[in-house]
Length: 507
Ligand code: HEM
Image 1 (cartoon, rainbow, N blue to C red):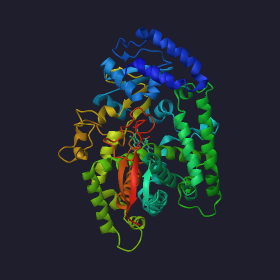
Image 2 (image 1 turned 120 degrees about the vertical axis):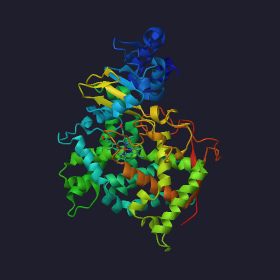
Image 3 (image 1 turned 135 degrees about the vertical axis):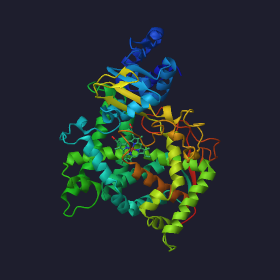
């Protein structure tokens, strides 16, 4: 799609927000009339290609069709680096191995600010007037995430996670059809809450669904106007504030209850309080941990189930792996499946499921669509000979490596053997595989996310016969495609609904 088309389509989306509809309509009209002059890219003295266009219009395609926008930008400039304006900010889009290496290895590139301004669906308590001590720094945040997801805690949590998943699965009935991107996603939401907050909340279905709703509102209203012009009143901004307040108010009583308890438990909230965090710091932490724990895991589990359903040879191999750990690690008592699986040690989940590991690796390669974002705070940063000024942003689309045919043969084909010893396509270039991030910002939740995926897939494969079906209940010819333009989560493209048809085969 051309940049003009993208701009018109995205401008149309912006017209849906009545508070900004008028200025957008004017700008859109101007863009159409002035297109030939405005959307010409240019190279400055040092050869950096700058996309033309009104800095007030460029944000729309960048926010609503990011993948298409970046792809067409690279095609038009025929460069591995180009820049464009998003309101008053400059963004440098990067492509290729050298840029990727600089992006992931350079000091002074701030991940939180990158995503905060250019993605913007995480809850920010400062926006609702909550004052946080300056000591709440990011390294402490990362340290606590690692502590909350360490081996001991995961081992202790395993039986409860199985109970949570089983309870949800019982709600699906013995036979029927469900939408994985809602039902499996809800299940992942609950297990994330279990690890990030406290038992009482993890079993309060009403509070869970209220919390989930607020995250949805935050995501839907992460519009360029709400993020980049925070002083401008807009409906989106108001909705974001209300959702953040609702998150705060829903979570607050649980933190206060933990605070007032005579005997602290081992739950995450108690752990954080024991480290001396204030109520507001605990709230900020858990609301962000839930956000991070959810954005990729929910869809990751869904796509894994979908690919397994379509690639029977892999489904059989993973099924055999699940049976093998059941035989090796559980007794043949009459306990229900989930109770038996709950006795499998953490080490077996981590080390004895190499096929499922490969399947998940390939699933993430094919589905993880986001553009990684950073803001520069390094006054000496040069990427491929271009100086990146302090305060500017850099953007790297994961599809640049994951969907690159020079790295991955037939990149749109599901083929976990591409990672096998001897083939190892992911080793062809530096950071060619970014499913769990890399360099200075590897994913800190990887162990938990892998465990969560494995136990859900194991319960699913051992407990159900299932197949992917379309709205008519028929097995479709193809799986739905991933919407690479969705900047928040790797969901299926709109208009391609898919369901899982289930039949329970064990008690
Ligand atoms: C399938 C599930 C998951 C996938 C595919 C995934 C993927 C990623 C990726 C690609 C990054 C790097 C982002 C970048 O470079 O811009 C990242 C970072 C991160 N992830 Fe995950 N993630 C998953 C689950 C989780 C979970 C469950 C948690 C925690 C509850 C988590 C916590 C984090 C944190 C804290 C970072 C930032 C690390 C830093 O700032 O240095 N992730 N993740």
